[in-house]
Image (cartoon, rainbow, N blue to C red; front, side, top):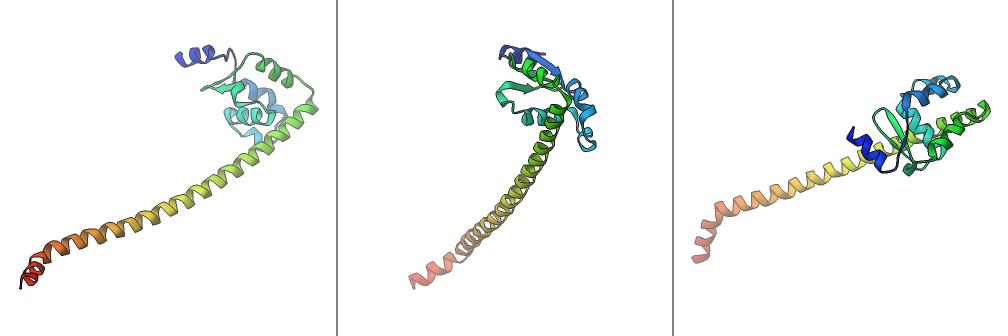
Length: 150
């Protein structure tokens, strides 16, 4: 409850549930988009619509809008089906791009992890080298000092 109040104080007075927004578009969605969770569909819809991240915030079950942005979004939702079909195409395109970006990020993360593992392996070798040298010096130091005195 406190998080809802803080969002409203920050200037996000309008709100709508994910399921309501999803149900409005459900009849226009192709099969692969109809299986999306409502929250993910709403995120894709807002990105495809071109809304700025500052215009809305996601809660657990609702999305909160800045003043005036919900009215603009509501007007788009009530527009003709041809415009909605174009918007659904944009959503599909955004989803493909987001999946591609996630795949790129995963590949980058795997490479970074591989480099970190190899760097740690090299550091372990350096640590082992120094510890073995220290132990060898400690073990043979009395003999070396005895030979140096003679």
